[in-house]
Structures are given as C-alpha cells and as structure tokens.
Image (tube, rainbow, N blue to C red):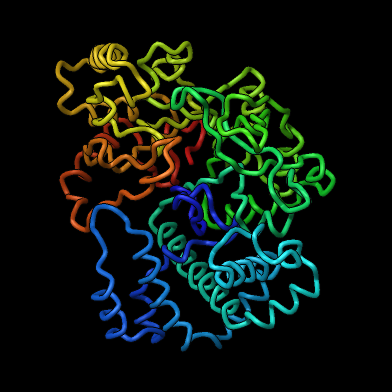
Length: 478
C-alpha cells in the first residue's frame, strides 16, 4: 500500500501532515451509521450534495463530504469511553498533531512558518492558550484518529483471519508542513523562522534530466543519534503496528542522501552526504527485538556498493522493477528475472512508473523520459525476452514473468492486472499536479481477472501454504 497518513501538498501520500496519524479520507462512513453516530438520511443528503467521480479522485470534494459527515458523527460520539482511553494512550504524538490541525484551520491552512511567531516557535504559554481556545477542534481531530485506528485494527484482524498480510510504505523524509517537523524542529536543518536551509531530492536520473527537488527538510542525524534515534524507533514501531512488513522508501538515503541548498530551484546543484547507516538499523533491531527486520529496502536510484552492503548486512529484500530491465542503462541487467536472487521483491512497475500497457505503447520523444528510438528498442527487447510476438497482452506477459522469477515476493499493481493504459498511472515524478487521483470503479474487479491471476499464482507456486509461507521454504515471503 501507499502511505496512509493525512495527505498534504499535491495530495501526495508522501507529503503527509503526520508520520503517525491516519488519513481521515480512508475512514469508512457506513460503520458510523451502524454504530448510531450518523443517521442514514444525513449520509444520503451529504452524498447527494457532493457527488463524487468514479475514475478520478476529487480531493477537495471528497474532503468536504467526509468532514461534514465526520463532524456530524462527532456530535454523538465525542464522549465515548474508548475515545478517552485512545487519547491518553496516544498522547505523545496525538495532542500535538490535533493542535497542529486546529491551528492550520484557524490560520486558513497556511504552513506553520506563517503562523504568529509565538505559535510558530511553540512558546509554552501560547500553546497552552491555543489548546484552550481550540479545544473543540482539537477534540474533533482526536476523534478522527480514533475512528481511523479502530477501523484499521478491524481491517488488520480481518486480513489475518484469512491468512493475508499487509505491506506498508514508510517515506524516509517528512513534509515540512507537518506536525512532526513543527514539534521537533531541533531534529531538522531549519533556520530561526523554521524554514529549511537544505532540502531533499535526487540528482538527474531516469525520471528527470534536472533531478528531483522534493523539498523535504533534512534530518540532523547527529542529534537523532544522541537520542538513540527515538523518533525513528517510534515511527517504525507505529507503522509496524498497522502493517506486517514495511517498505522503506528511498533506502539509499540511509547510506547517503542528496542535499540541495534550499534556494536552488532544481536538484542539479546538490551534493551527497553520509546517512546514519548501520547505527540506525542496529538500534531498530534492538528496539524491535526482531531479526531480520520486517522491512523491504526500496533500493532504486544511485545504488552504490555501500548501499547494497547495508541492505545485505541487515538481510533486507531489495526491489526489482521489470520495466527497468530492457533499456540501455548499465544497471538494466540487474532487473532481468534470470539475474534475481531469492531475497528480492519484484514489481512490474511501482506507483512512479507508467502502467505496463502505457509503458509498452509509449512513443517517446518530446515530453517523455525516453526517446522514440529508445522506446522502440525496449519494445523489441521486451518482446524477445517475453517470447511473444505482438504484445497485445504485455501486462499479463510481464505479470507471468514476475511470478515465475525466483524472487520471494511478487507485487503487481492493480492497474496492470486490469490491463489499463497511461490514463491509470498513479504518479509522474517531477510533475506537481494531477497525481494520486486514479481509482478503480466499483464494478471493475471482474471474476475473470481474479481467476486468471489465481491460475498464475498456483502455476508458479506462489499460493500461500497452510503455514502462510511462500517459495521453497528457504525464506518466508512477506
């Protein structure tokens, strides 16, 4: 799954307003009717007033609709004893997150660096006054998180009862306009007004000729080390409470990361800086009392020998992206299935890639990351490798290739199972608008799709055993 935090800039799940909170947009409303918190006519009226599109998410309309319904439910449920217990148990992060959301609303949703200086700088007297003034809104934000937590635990238990595990995604960096950065300013490179002095990104690569300037504030890893990486320990522990296995986004950043001066408009003029390396993962292993760690390393990008060594020392599976296997990049052979190791996770493509159909049919040239000549060469190469003539079902051919590989885990985006084109692409790196909007329709998951996927799963021995393991028993798949 993509990250499930409350989305921020650009509706991106990688720019969440909290590293610990869940997104209110994921709260199911029907159970609130069943619980007596929301009347069916109220929900029906809200649905009629805010009709939602089927194929693209209208985030503004969705937020209005859900917030209206959740505020109605809050009127009846705000004194639930379970809610009071939840607030006390999660106090360490929840109180500051709820206050952050209340202050954002009071300031017209502008970033926290534009609040009154005494609130921006978290002066104790100003915070205490704000908690009194905004107590109702703070309580509502706590209520949202209680609902999310309760429904997520029910989902997790439902899946476990059916032998299903959940794989989550943990972004390495945090959004600047987040409760965590506001609460822990000392852990980031910020100036006296809270603005970043250096920001995150990656140098020029497959996706962009000028690199990607993500803009997240960078950690002061030396200060985190002084705390025994307490923030990161709690962050990973919290994520693993929701998921059985977690994918560490941008794993190379733990070995070295690209530091960009905040005044730069692109990522070109950055530099590599050493990350925390072994120290962080040794601390995580000791704190979580588990070996190997239930983590997947998203080891894409400028992968050096040091990155691979860090990954392998902690026995973390790395990623293999089938779409990367057929180009002229020197690393392309690493992504060919006959070169995989068992400790790997293979995707046809991730949320940053086009769909298989879109990638195969792309013409290249202006506006593309590939030239017309390159796309044609990759088409011929992939057809030869897959042993097919025309690519009419290239998505199923590539799904089959992932399934038959020796990689312990194969992950197929739903868009590829459905055989959709570029219209269903989830994200275009470097493009600020129009991302994260695709969703499948209510009747899109047809029985013939699941039957065909199940057939491949059985054919290549990926159907879970009674014990819940996959593969040949040498290693358990997540």
